[in-house]
Amino acid sequence: MKTWLSPAKLNLFLHITGRRDDGYHELQTAFQFLDYCDELQFEITQDLNIELLTPITGVNNNDNLIVRAARILQQQASVSKGVKISLSKYLPMGGGLGGGSSNAATTLVALNQLWRCKVSHTELSEIGLRLGADVPIFIHGSAAWAEGIGEKLTSISLSEPWYVVIFPNCHISTAEIFSAVELTRDCEPITISRFLLGEGINICENVVIDRYRAVSDALDWLAQFGQSRITGTGSCVFVDFDARDEAQKVVDKIPKNWHGFVAKACNKSPLAKSLDKYL
Image 1 (tube, rainbow, N blue to C red):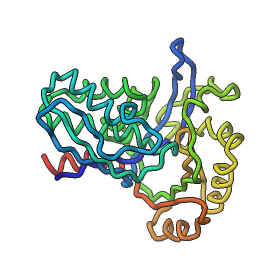
Image 2 (image 1 turned 180 degrees about the horizontal axis):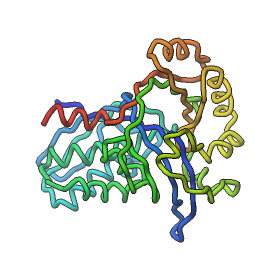
Image 3 (image 1 turned 45 degrees about the vertical axis):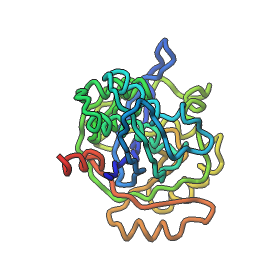
C-alpha cells in the first residue's frame, strides 16, 4: 500500500497587518517545507464509512482534520465509496509545524486521486481553506509568500539549508496567541524583496515567550548556534545551518527534556515530489 507524505512547514517570519470583521487576522508570512513528515495510508472501501484507524489521544475522530477533510471531499464530489485511513504521527501537535493542516491537505490530495474525483487544484485549496488557513499551502506544494489569512500564495525560491528544530515539550494553541490582547496587529506591510533582503520577524514570538517559559528557554539555548526563531505561534523553535553534520552536532547536545531533529528545507514539498514520482 502506498504511503502518502504529510510534511512539516516553517514560517520564516510572521507579520499581522490587520484584523477582519470576521475575527480572522490579515497576515504576511513565508512558508517553507521540511523533509520531516507524518505518513498516511488509505484503503478504499465500497461503503460510505470514513474510518481513522489510528486515533490521536485527546482528539475525537469526528473532530480530526483528516476525517473532516475526507468527508467534505466525499460530499462535494458525490463519492460513493469510503476509506480506512492509518496515520503514523511524527510531527508534534501544538508545535507550529502545521501537522494537522498538512494531514488534511494530504488526505484531500490522496483521496482526490484514489476516489478519482477529478477536483481541480484550485477547488481542493478552497475546500482546504474551510478546514484551516494553513491547509492551502500544503496543497500548493511550493515554498510561498502568503498574504490574506494565509491563502493568497505566491511561489518563491529560497535557499534550502539544514534546520535544527526543537520541540520543547509544550503545546500551544494558535487561537490563544492570536486572541492575546498584547499581540501587535498593525505591522507595516513589507514586500517579498524586502523579506529576501533579511527583513521580517515573527510578531507572535514575544507573546509566546512571555507565556511559555519552555519556549523562551529553547530559544535562548538555540541562540548560541545562530538566529533562533519560533515557527508560527510555536512551540517549535529552529535555526539554520549550511551542512547536515553541523546541525546534527547541535541536535546531539539538546537537553533531554526536549525533542529535536534535523531536517532539510524544501522549496517543493515532499508530497508534491512524491506525486511527480508516481505520475
